[in-house]
Length: 190
Image (cartoon, rainbow, N blue to C red; front, side, top):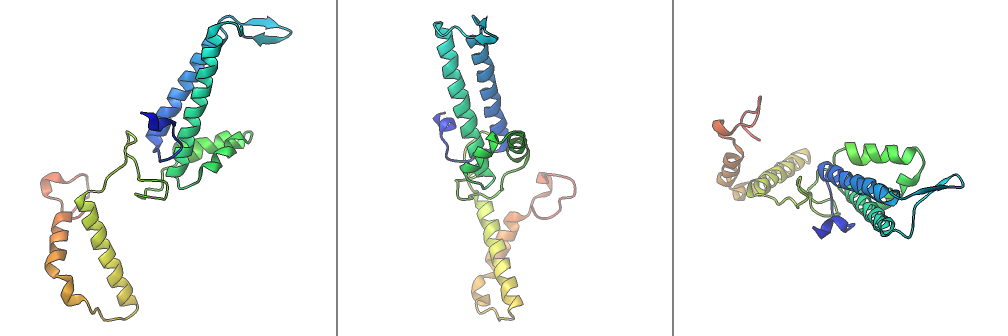
């Protein structure tokens, strides 16, 4: 629960919008509390600072700002950028528009670890690799190595030791049984 206040880690778009909704709600509540007993003096609306509700609302404003800043910085981390980009928010007109597009609409980098921590699921928890993901990555790395060797016209010295059976096992794990096909047009592999 306390990790929503930290400035480290990553947030996806869903968690970002959830935290921003909480922050907006806190800001609205603080406005309702602060100006409950406001007076109009010299052309300005002046809140009653002797009322304890004013100070509660001031605390809510600080909390809302902290939550939104942490969410924006974590979202920037998910996009592969440093938290210093958050300062663009304070540029008039361009800043809020940039935040809406960059943080609210565009997807993250998609990489499991981009230097700011592991990718998160919808609840904000780090995504763990499964055995099949590791096998798929191993198979893809092997294919990249073979293609690089073919491009360099180098004979594969390790061909006998690569164990054709191991590759067949990996391919069998990647194959989706007919009952588990996940969508139209999917055929043999994920």
